[in-house]
Length: 312
Image 1 (tube, one colour):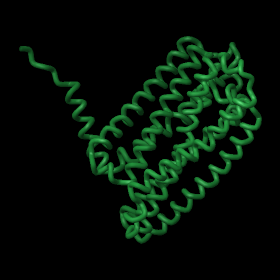
Image 2 (cartoon, helix red, strand yellow):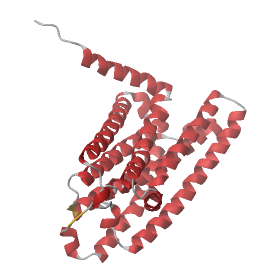
Image 3 (cartoon, rainbow, N blue to C red):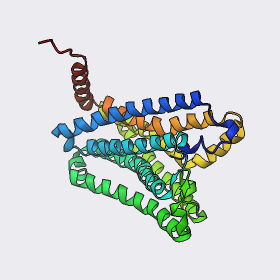
Image 4 (cartoon, rainbow, N blue to C red):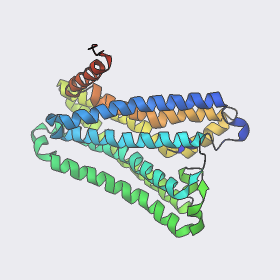
């Protein structure tokens, strides 16, 4: 989410030319539209097929898909604003940033819940139906949002308490550090991200190794679950790059002082778009049931587009 600020934080001599700026924006929008369309297809299939509505695994997955769709839409909006309007009102910027923070922090928490569900399904299959119910799944989703709320809302309260009233009527370049500027917010953010990183990675490592030991004894489902946890880990690693964004920018500025705009653009693609592209891959394409319905949906849409009506 902070990556969208890369263009405007550069010196005037290092900003992109018009043609390069257009190219970058076209790439971002094209990739974003592709992922959002695929996610929209998965959401449509989920709501149309009863088999998915009663399965905790798919409920957690579709929650992450919806969450990532909102997050991706917001980051693309911020990216486009960095090349067009440059400055917007603080109140509007705060709303966009807060919603982007909510959805960004939800993703790793959702991944850890999916890993736990996978662990119960493989390592305790006889108790899976009793432990992983639909009701408890929605409770966990509520806890995900409650945890993000406890992390994000204090930033707003601190800003309201420390910033002058006139600040909220000014226009700023829309990024987190220009709206939530208090050093207390930065300290809280770093401490929270460290705690989140440790807890989630311990959860993933524990579930992976337990599934790994179970997979040795062999079912194909256990081995597939092990590979799924690995994909979760890779996706989580990409998502966690958001948390080291300020330090990454500093390193890039030091290593590539003459091509910082291109370096930050590559980081934006890797940090904001690539993790959201992996999500539909994990279940949308790897899962047999979802893949079957997705093929039917896409083929149906393709048929509607290509059919030429006969003249009367």
